[in-house]
Image 1 (cartoon, rainbow, N blue to C red):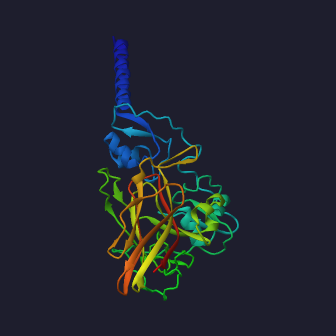
Image 2 (cartoon, helix red, strand yellow):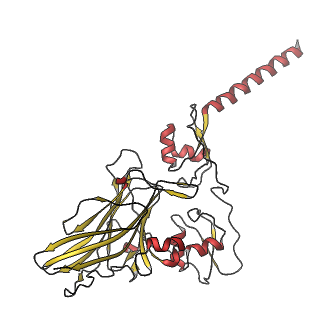
Image 3 (cartoon, one colour):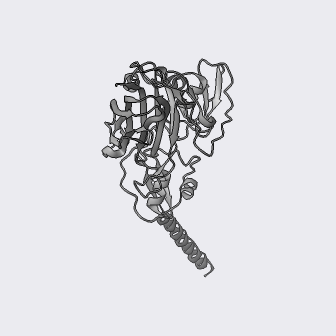
Length: 372
């Protein structure tokens, strides 16, 4: 009887383990990350929290997940949505590279991008990618040690503090006598740039004012339907892939890029110009590089033509919102009349309504000419 008691106890233990393992299996499922997904969207879809997803999947950065990544969904017994994506060959967080023996190094900080680091050190994004064997220029991580080619100086120390209000505009430009010349100061964005409010995320062309919106977009009720502050760069040709230079640069050697990944944006690039009575023509060139997803390395443009739109700003008026062609150059024009000498705030309002994979806009070669 004593031996029989041990056998009964052993059977009870086996049954207990099976029940526990079955409960765990039912309490969790998996999900394969799809294009456009964020941890917030996945948490809402499965009725869990971002923190729970981050903890269960050991994700250091909640903003860094990749298409094809397999996530464990805690506390869910439902079947995961169908997924066909294949995880990339490179993991989300590759092991840190060893510091180089020559040149200088830089440790990636929160909010850094390869564009930002390249501009800071005066080198090209492609040069940094090549020096560090980076296959995807959009994938770097906090704490990664980068070799900075062609640089022997220590990295600058960032001391920027975001302002509570949008930056004050630069001094008004005094227009020259009407002569058919471009009345904009630095209209082709070749004349340098500055950081308004010491915000390193914003490189604004000299002579121009930048404003942006934050808060609900009014075009949806999901958590991601909010305006976010875009990033702005004044990019020379050397910091663009050779096959994209003719697309994004309309004249000269530089272009302005305003962008945000997985975020809706609404902003205005403006300048104050003193004008005498007459009729004027404002021409703006834009390239909307809006991407809803990438398929086999190819850009897929948004299906909604209202995903990106622009409007001319002339003082308190201007034009209405107008749609533009995505993935190609757009030359837009607006004619207006001034009846008395005054300083007028002129510019372009731009908005990308949705949190696209890439909400990118290239701006170049703007002109203001008196025609009468």
